[in-house]
Image (cartoon, rainbow over all chains, first blue to last red):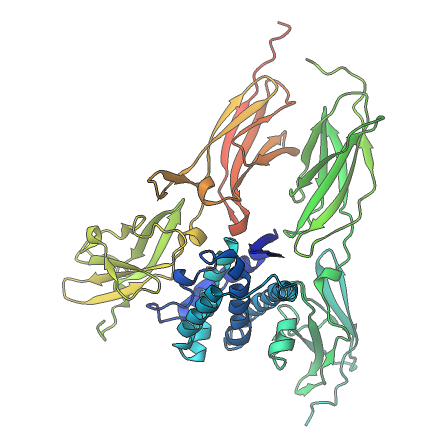
Length: 152
Length: 204
Length: 213
């Protein structure tokens, strides 16, 4: 069912299970496209759950923006089944992003140094790759991001 | 260039009940010919971030009927744009787009079909199977002054389930509503149904 | 890798995992391959270096227990197998990315069904896993999955079921007819991961009612 995420003083609800079910149906085929397995974008050192609560909302908001702006958009596939699933995930992410935007509007989503530093680390891992390879790898790591959110 | 000779489908509308979403339109008629229709959709994400992207519907691309079950396409609680075009051989019509985007949170939720029976002293309820997104909130009570209402969330889909062990001589009443967590809504309660075990005393 | 077609030496390299017991398995494509030996390596996704599984080097069996090596159930791993024939042909194949938290299946629970005159008690025993906490104690499925719950069903004369469920481990179906046979099933559910165990089934008969004899 619905999951409540506690991100510092920002509290949102989201359907993590629906997203996880959707991703599990395409996980193997998406991850198989990622042939660069000795590097990773979402690393433990920058994980959401190891970030101090007041910075968690900002870090998640920036990571979701990365996915919405540069992952789902740059992920190309001729497979309509995968296309539908990524569309469903993208639209669910958009719903989460809207809730985070409300927190931002209510000043409960501040960006401290830790969030800014960790996001820039994630971005640099992302930008080590070509846009297409980064989109494939980041989409393949969606289960890691969902697990981070699960821990909130 | 046979692109726009064929008229575009008209009167698009979505009929959505209990999270089953059906896109319908007026048929394009060419005597003696079979018309095929192609349905495409885009969620709010596509319309905001890549508006040129439209996704072929799971079940309506192509279809011969002037309707398409879009339930498997509408999988997030955001507004969806939908469009249809007709095709006959090499001729294809212009796209016809749903006037207002459709959001699944507008689906009509109806109380489920409920069957209340008894087996000996057991109060048994059977609820229709509406799919995995549905839970049922069952309220039941003894029809007597000051009786307390009990509530149970039931997930059994289409299987008769024991609700309570009854005492003889007192009517037991039941009503039920559906819960859909994905959109955070519930249906109205059903009619109340009551059953009673005749007045034998319960063996100790 | 040799350019020569060696895919027949090795197929279906994958993890088979249940209750976090993670076994790497594979097949040889050949009808019989008496002279084939296999060597296993593994690594965490994102690491550069492949690590050698010492006890699975130049083995002839077609499985290797990597439970300890893939013990962080939230981490994604890869494993790979190299098959070498006596004639020197060899091929290496890798698994899909494997995260046991997502991909492990849940075995049926261990349950004791105790029939009484008008009720049946069902006691569910905790399921331990090979995973150890920081202090070394073995984690149970309940420790790993906070949303885990049990669902018990008692089939009553083929027409309806009695349902009980929750997080506790002791349940009792009451209000039953004495000296009657019932079919009880117990399953483990982990909704967050859409995991559902196969059922544990017990067929029990309530005791005869000797009150008035």
